[in-house]
Length: 244
Length: 249
View 1 (cartoon, chains in turn green, red):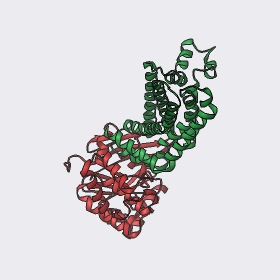
View 2 (view 1 turned 90 degrees about the vertical axis):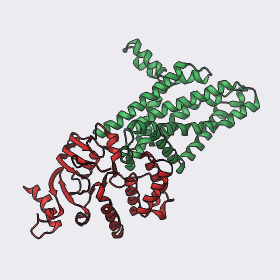
View 3 (view 1 turned 180 degrees about the vertical axis):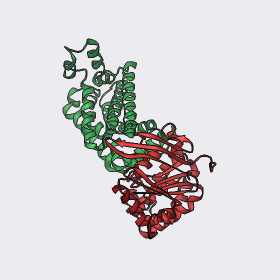
View 4 (view 1 turned 60 degrees about the vertical axis):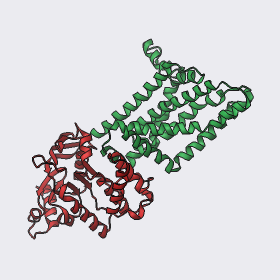
C-alpha cells in the first residue's frame, strides 16, 4: 500500500512538474465549455440541468484520456526508467495500480475544475443536484475505464504515438460496442449470447444510465470489472516483456 | 548484517537468455561473496548488461537460476530486490524531478520513513557530492551529475549487494577517481559487481574479474591472473587475447 502511494505521488509530481498537466486541464476545460454552450445549446435548451455538458464527455474522453494514458508506461520504457522502477522492491501490480490511480486522480482534478458550470446552472435555475452528482460520478468512472485501457496499451510499446492511436481505437470500440457498428459485425454468425455479451460491454449504455442520475449497482460493477480486467492485462503485459 | 560464508551473496548457475533467435547469454555460472568486488568485462554486446538485468530481476532467465542471499530471483523477487542496489545502464532517472525529490522517492520505496528518510538522503547527497544541485531538475544536469544521481539512488538503503552497470561512464577523471574510492570504501561489507570498459579500473577496484564475450564466460580470476594471460603482463593485451583469441579458435 505504501508503495502504491509513493508511486502515485511521484507520478502526479511528474504531471505537474511538466506542462502536461496544465495544457491538458486548459484544453479539457476549453473544449467542454465549447461543447456545452455551442454544440449542446446550454442556454437554448432553457432547462436547469447539465445534460448539454455531460453528453459530450464520452467524445471528449475518447481523445483526451488516451492522451493522459499514453505516457504511463511508454515513457518509462523509452527513457529506461522502467528498469529502475521494476528493480526497486515493488510488485508489478503495485506499480500498475499506483500509476493508474495517479492518472485517475489527475483526470478527477480536471473534472472537478469544471465546477463553474455547476455554479452557473444553480445560479440560473433550480437543477436536481443529485442527478448532477450522479453524472459526475458516471463521468469519472468512464474516465477510469478508458484510462485502464490506455494504461495497458501503453505498456505494449515504446512509442507514445502508437499507444495513443491504439488506445483511441480500443476505447472507441468499447464505447460503441452496444451500437450497430459493432453488433452488425457479430449478428448473423455469432450465437445470440455472444452478441448480447458484446452489447453488454458497451461503455455507452452503462455511462448513459448513470448520467441520467440512476446509479445502478450493475453499472458500478461494470466499470469496476472493466478497470480490473485491463489493469490485470497491464500487469501480464509487463511480466511477459520481462520473459521476452 | 553480513550473511555467513556458507552461502554466496550471488550465485549464478547455467544462466541462459534468448532474445528471439539471438542467444545473448550462454550458460554462464559464477558466484560472488561479501567483500568481493567483481569486475564484468567484455566487448559491447557481450551480454554483460543482460546478465546484470537478470540478476536484478528486470529480465527473466530463459534457463538457469540466479540466487541472491539464497533467494531465487524469479520466485522471491521482492526479497532479492530489497537486498540489491542497482545502477542500470545509462543511469536512468525521472528527468522532471529535482535531485532531492527523486532520492526521497527512491528512499520511500526502499522503506525509509520520516526523519530517517531525509537524514539518509542528505547523507548520501554529501557522500556523492551532489550538494550543489539538490534543487535542480535532473534533466538539466550534466552527464556526470546524472550518473552520480544514479549512483546515489543505488546506495540509499545501504544494500548488501551493489550492482552497477558502467558506473564511471561519462565521468571526468576526477569524478571517476571519486566513484572508485567510493566503491572501495563500501567494498568491505558488500558484494559488488561493476561492469566497465576501462581495464585500469579492474586493477584499481576489483578483487576479481570476469570476461564475457558473445554471451560466454571466458575468464574468471583475479586481476593478477588476468595479467598473466599476456606475455608482457599487460591487462589490455590479456583482454584482447582472451576476447579475440577464442573467436578464431
